[in-house]
Length: 266
Image 1 (cartoon, rainbow, N blue to C red):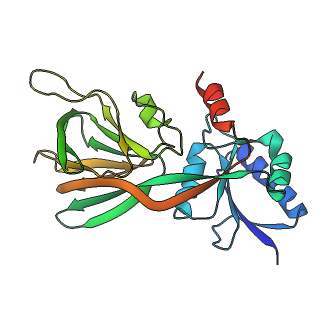
Image 2: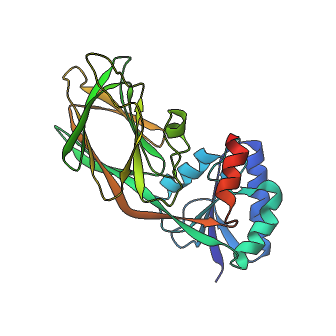
Image 3: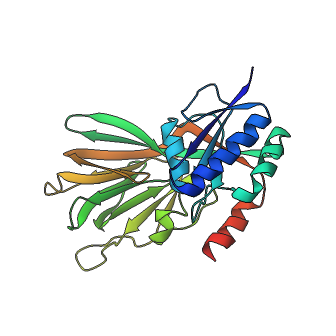
């Protein structure tokens, strides 16, 4: 019986070329490649940039099958493997020269007048007004009212997502395996009328964050999950907490995170 490997890739020329090379090398080593998610596979390979990696994670419904990223994009913070190192990557995989990093996901329960549903994210959730107006939100941590926020919106990010939208908004960088998540304001207002905290807040993963919209004028709110945006009416609250689901990512260089940080951002 052949060992199965799922490969996800975007449709640009470099990603297609990388897929064909990876597929050929894997098949030469006795693997069978699936381009649709197969729950019997032993590995998920995502070719492209971070967007391709995130789409692969969501497309697999946050599978417990380990992931690895091959970079053909520009930033590729999830993507450890470069095109010129694919052969070495396959050999190292076969010889088990890697370790498994456990990445904690974030979960959100949202309640409206009509529905209650929960969802997960790899990078971040974002709450914003659906127009150019200020949004007003009450923020509770473990049932304690922290503040009434006024501004453009809020980012709630995982440690692995801290280097994405969160960092662009002035949030802190968190190592992916740290046990916590982050609340970062978007253009908070601080005046005689409003007193919004202007810094990001790191919340322990044992705590629950609840966000309550407080104005009838904001019946429609944009809720963004890993870049996927939807609008909802009459929201009673959002409640965020660590997910019980873990994501598993193969790491082939134990110093990869810091090397990537330097190469991508400095």
